[in-house]
Image (cartoon, rainbow, N blue to C red; front, top):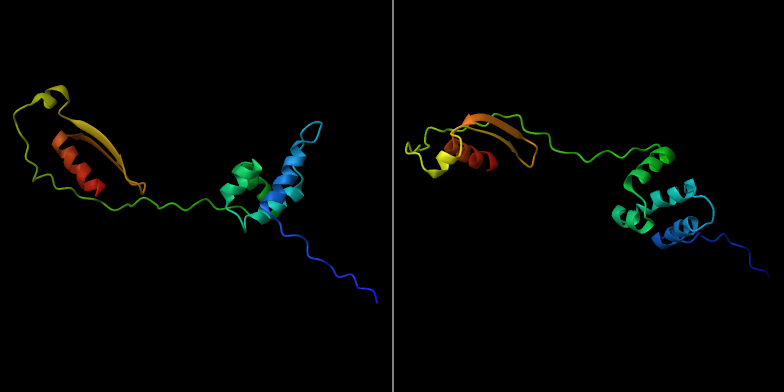
Amino acid sequence: MTEEATPSEPPPLTLESVQAKFDAWRQRPGTRRPFPDSFWLDVIALQHHYKLSKILTTLKISRAQLASKEQKLTGKTKLAKKTKTPGKEFIEADFSTIHVDTRPDFAELCWPNVLSIELTRPDGTVLKVNELSSQAVDELITRFIV
């Protein structure tokens, strides 16, 4: 009795096997040509099992190269990371409680009495203010950052 041939499963795709393909392609003599589409399909498949940064560094390819090939081969475009939109609410600062010393000290003599500032919070909110005293700027920074 002969054993029937059973289709065997292809070996699992590993980062090392894809790296070997890329390295062999790079070492071929002659002019450098773009990697075959089958290589890029392997890279796309690897993303389900490996971190993208690990794939890119191991295969010595850029994120832009991969994104371009992935869009061409699969039609998918990766969405950019969502960022929070800056808040549009008005933040009121009460400067009436600020004590203003009328005696000029050394710092006041060296710096102008009126300042212009631009503050940006990590969420992208930008605040631009012109013509404030240094004490008002200190208070504004404290209230804006918190």
